[in-house]
Every structure is written in structure tokens, then in C-alpha cells.
Length: 290
Length: 273
Image 1 (cartoon, chains in turn yellow, cyan):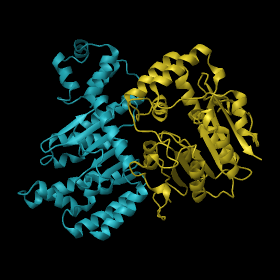
Image 2 (cartoon, rainbow over the protein chains, first blue to last red):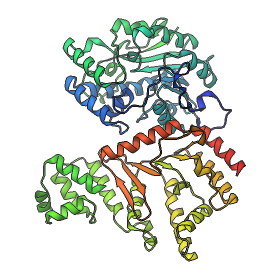
Image 3 (cartoon, helix red, strand yellow):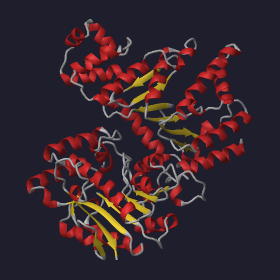
Image 4 (cartoon, one colour):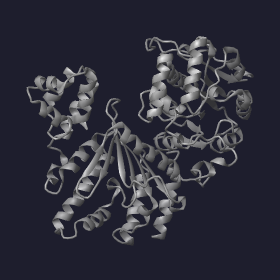
């Protein structure tokens, strides 16, 4: 069965927003489509070798690579972590439901492909706040076999919408794997990212898992950070808040970290013989809810 | 398209047209004609030029060689040569090499999704005085093109259409109802995504009219925009041009109904037709 194509009653997740609806409750932070400034999802697409990016995205990346050459490695390492984490969650932790928040532009090895290759019946719900990213997801992140793939159009900060819609698509009485990869650093402290994560994890039962990755400030020197912040404030739609190892660990309150714990993305259960040399600027961990 | 890709490789390698011409024992103007697609590419020349330009990646080289073969005759559509303008043959070569095809349609159902009766009605509109056998030949070409949908490893096709495409009863209501039913079947194919921009959305970003964006798997091959005209076609592969169309395609796909809603909507229009 095909998630987006099977018949079911019309529901909120099915309908693209009407023009002008962006200001409605819960969608207040949906980004405008502006190709003249760099966009997080398109920058990531470009760093991974995709073609869904624009001149402003590439210009920002070109400058950022001069300041911080390991940026491209960080993007690839984050993507590889996604693959290994989803594989672990499906094959070893037995997860059959995923809530993938911050889907991004589809590329190779998306969550449903990895999970459904191991357990075809796995349900994957993708969440993104960008209507164009979501249009790509609906068109390209489609299950071919027994599993299903669904989509929620919501900002991570709008946990009420995410949880209400996810509850219709997933069985919240059974464990859910929540993935928040390279997205929480786009949530400033003012929006209380800890409360957001806690609310999502409160909604899922014991035995559920959280996988996340997050930019850490420890990995670059003061001068590099200052230059990157300057670049991003001038050239990017999204702004970032790096968080330290201790700050990232706090997201896992009430959870036990799976070995090897909180490490750089390239250090989390690396596949022997496949790692490329490099140092990312991203912390990651996978935790199991008690 | 291959020509302009060769040109990009040449410029990146800092090779002059004279040096390239010397390599393949040709004139400087031959290089210019190769790069602007005015002469047919030969596999050996292309291989020599790629070597000269320092393109050593075997996957890219063999893919390039395959595209050269595909862009050269004979191909399945050669049996339609007397009705097939050269510019459309080029498109068919690119279409069959593409990994993703994105289209926007404002008037007719995309040729890849047309039923035989609908295709016949469209063809008759364009060739009012053509004899029956020629019409049938053209319809046959369109059907043959649809093999791309059922071949192994088919391309991903993401097609956005204006509601007018569904409402215009080309060939009459019965033909149109069958066409709409066929569209819902096509929409259920896993590699096909259909979206409709309903009239209720008001004006939309597709004021440019019908266009197609072809994407190839290879990282180094640029997207190609194809715009058909009455007597020819425009191919765009300069990044700045292509990005205008990608942007329109992106906005249209976000404005349009979701794929699931589109399937229901097509069913509703069929009942009203």
C-alpha cells in the first residue's frame, strides 16, 4: 500500500494550505519562498550533492566552506548518522513507527527507505514546516510496498498540531522513534526547545526512542564561529543556536542513552571501513524513554 | 545538451577550442558546432575530448557514452521519422535518459498519460488535413513513448496540471471520462505524482505556460528545461535559466492540491464530465 495514495477521508494533513493561510495559528513561522537568501534545507541539499538549490544557497555555502572547510563533511556525516540510527532503531530496537521532524529535501537514503528495507510494514510520518520541502516530500518520499508514509505540515514549535495529526497516523500506545536531525539548533532558547522535545516525548510511551543531532560550539574556534555567524546572519533565512555537550544531553532527560552515548555524528556506531576522514561539528545521540 | 556539457568540461579544464580540435583532428569550427549541438556527436571523439578535459570518472564517462548513443539514431522512434521533427527526436532521447521528469501542463493532458482516443483527438486538432494513416502513426508514436512508464527502473514523473486540463473535454465527454479514469490509474503508479492547481486557487505561478524539466542522475549533468512551440522547441540548460523554471515548478507544487487530494479531485471531475 502506498501511504499518500491510499484512499482515506480528507484530513488536515492532506490539504495544501490555501494562499494566505500562512498567518493562521500554528503556521505563523512557515518560511516564505525566497530564493534570494540561503535556505537551510536547500543548503543541506547542495552540500549533499543535490540539485534542488539556488544561486543564493550556493553562494552562502561557497563562503562558509572558506571559513569552515569541514562543513560539507558535517552534512555528509549527519546524513550517514541518520542512516545508521534508523537502521539501529528498526533492526535492533524494533521500532516500527517513525516521526521524522525536519524532513528536508528528499535525497538518497531517506528514513522510510532505510526503515522499510528492514521492516517493510514500518510507518513513517514526515514533518516539515516549509510548504515546498513538503511538496517534494509528498512527491518523492513515497512507499512502494507494505509500509506507509505520511506527511504533516507543521513547525516543530507547533507541537499541538504535530501531535494531534501524528496521533491519527501513528499508534501512540506503541513505541515511536522520534528523529530530530540537525533541526533543534534552528530553535532559539526563546522558543524553549527543551519544552518542545519534552512535550513530544511525553506523548509517546515508554520504550520509544529519540535520535537527534545538533551543532556544538566546541568544535570550532571563536574566530571561525564569529565568521560563520556573520555569514549566516547576512545570507541565510534561518539562524542557528549551537548547544554544548551538556546542553544537548539535557534533551534526553528521562531517557537512557544507547551506546556509545553522546558523541560526534561520525563517531556513533560507525560502519567499519566506510568512514571518511574528517571532523564534524555535530553532536548526536540516541536515547530510549524509560 | 551534451554539447554544452562538453563545453563546460573544456572551459573547466582551461582547454582552448584549437587544442580540442587538434585532439580530434578537426577544425576549430567543428568544436563550436559540436558544443552547440549542430553536428552529431561521435562516441570516439567524445571519449577523446573527455580524456583531454581530464574527466576520468568511469561512471560519468560511460553514462556520457550512453547518452551520446541515445542522442544518435537509430532509436525506437526512427520508424516515425517521416512525421517526427528533429527537435522532438532530441527530446525523446533526453526523456528516455532522464531520472526525474517534472512537467507543468495548462491545456492538454501530458503525452505520457494520454489515452489513445485522447491522443487521437489532440493530434487531429493539430493536423486537421492529415490523412487517417498519418494520424494513426502519430498516435502510435505517442503510445510508444509511454513505454517509459513501464520499463524497468522507470523515471520519476512529477506532473502538475492546471484544472483546465481536466475540464476541457478534448474528444468529447466520453473520451474525456475515460482519460480522467486513466489519469487516476496513472496516479496510483508508485513513480508517478500528479497534482492539480484548482481554479479556486486564483492566479498561479505557471503564467509561463507548459514546460518540462528533465533531471539526470549524474551530478555533473545539468537539468534541462524543454518548452515546445508550434514549429520547434526551446531547450534551456544554463543554470540561471533553469532555476527560473525550477522555482516556478516548486511554487506550483506547493500551491497545488496534494497528490492524495488530486486523485480524489480527478474522480470528482470525471463524475461531472
